[in-house]
Length: 41
View 1 (cartoon, one colour):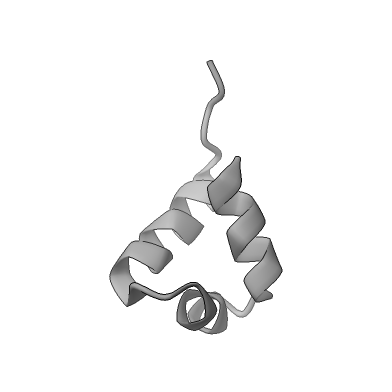
View 2: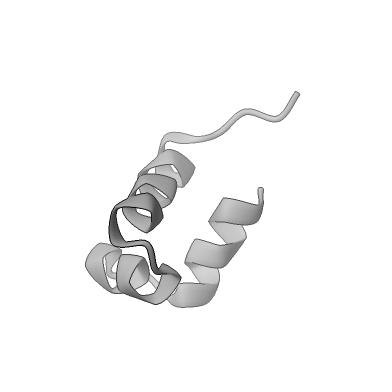
């Protein structure tokens, strides 16, 4: 069973809060592909 890291959880929560991958990335000061990758794992 794969475990979620705290960073992945932080990114997932930002996406849920903003309902948008790009806006979540902007809020976290990371790239949109990084957000997408974190949510896929």
